[in-house]
Image (cartoon, rainbow, N blue to C red; front, side, top):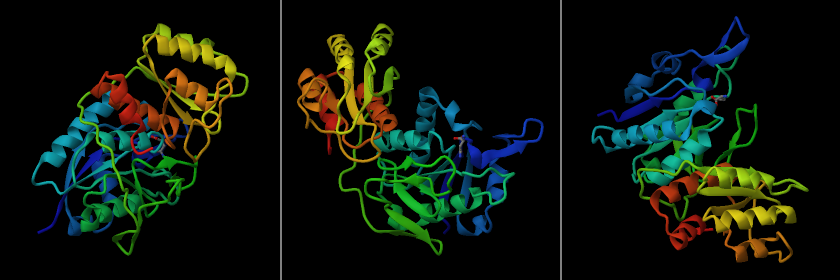
Length: 327
Ligand SMILES: NC(=O)C[C@H](N)C(=O)O
């Protein structure tokens, strides 16, 4: 019997065409048209089409993301469904993938896929990427791997992958440790596993979590925006190993004394943050103040993680442990 895959369509370039009146790409393709670009799909699997939205991924906010989570959860809880594929714009695909990875508790394959070239361009990559996602979804090797991102014949873990290039078809990379596997000759081949995956048992997330990137000479004025607007958490993309300009420190102190959770990651592409430096604004100083450390996550994913953790608990020690787990 053929396996059943639910494909949830959310939009993105995989569903876009150039509008001749504005000479720019906009959502235009429906689910059937996208599926129609993949040859022999009906011979391989039973496909259940689920229309969720036709949004560019910069339009996907945290409310929409939680609606999508509920839909994916319902699909994987359906005994008739063997795997779920989500077509998605690439700009925020890693955030959606990571939130689903943290919140879902399933062994069934859940795979995100998109395209870098729209349907009007020569070499539309939606069909090849969706084909590779289907091969990955059908493979018994893909069971219990966590949420996956399949693009350009590479299989990456949602917890590790990030969009690295604005244009390249080979844009989704796991810069620290590389892909989990590849899709070759219609088969999903894996070379490694994620040793410890993280699950956060919550159906709600905290939306008021900000993201701030550090730069040379910045001061703390912006911190008051987050404090005055009652943000519950803030991720700081710090410099290097996890250090901030000294003039930001008074703002961090104000945020912490207002019970805001301040999480630290680095603006470097790879490598963990750690409390190596003891000077004013150095990692050790920040840690002593009560800042928590986000390992090698990029800022946008650390924010998603803190949104999920703050949806689950208000207990500071538990927040710290969950945020710093495995790091
Ligand atoms: N390649 C893409 O899908 C990019 C597009 N701007 C989106 O994220 O919707």
